[in-house]
Length: 210
Image (cartoon, rainbow, N blue to C red; front, top):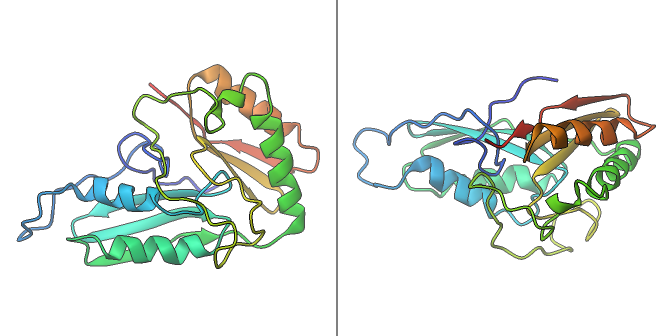
């Protein structure tokens, strides 16, 4: 699967993501002292429908923000662009977010992989409130989730919230994105995903927190 540019500073939301983001200074002539990377990340983290079946990344280059990743809920694509455009100092937003196609077959795989990973006794601590406390690389959401908001594909059913392991499914292929505590958990997550009988393949792009 195409390699993604990872979100800001190590993996903050994994929009959070995950390694290697561009962190340039504010554009010349701008007096706003706020760090644009932090501000973009903050706005993306506030998106109310972002969850385990989505994965956003971004880069900042002067006044231009480029958004990427894949999302299950189509509303996230336009909402992310709208919120980022409101940030002081942002003049251009390049929206490369891909909306994953509607597919009952892929939905079955998503949920099977979600149960296989998050219901595992060794991985369940990664559930929101499950006890794992990341060291600065994941951020909590601060807006409530409206299960009947506009644009939701299956109202109230998406696993929305602070999930460090993101499960992306397209055409029967699973990609794991996000961050885990150690190499063992990274490998175990992939093994559980590979146990989903309907999945054609599993790409393990999880990062290990350092």
